[in-house]
Image 1 (cartoon, one colour):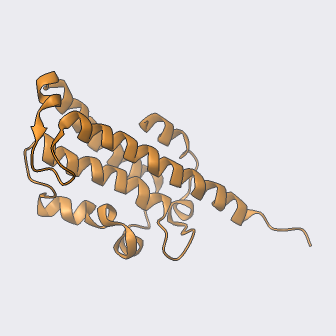
Image 2 (tube, rainbow, N blue to C red):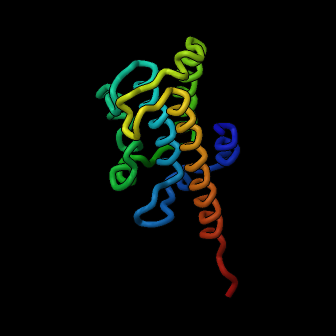
Length: 156
């Protein structure tokens, strides 16, 4: 899924990444950082055994606005070039892959009885991250189409 997301991003400018499609929407940049934030929070839960949504103060400062999106994300997640977002995505994914290499099928199938939507195993949690990325890819695609349409000046 990540490779598909990345294919959409080449040549996006800071202005493109900060473009807001509607007053209550989210920018492409905020959605990208949201993907990194979500994966980070799942890392804390599944790899470190921390209850949801426990994270370090540093993580909350770095990813909190992107995790929540909305007004906070619109206000605080902007002004970054594409490498900022790509680096965050890559850094987070490197940890995910390194941690997966340490684990086996027993770990994947381990059930968390206290998960918010009911007993859930790690496989389901990480599948959710994949589908979460797919969902936001759809939003990014819509944003890109709207951004291109906004750039076209009608003939008079």
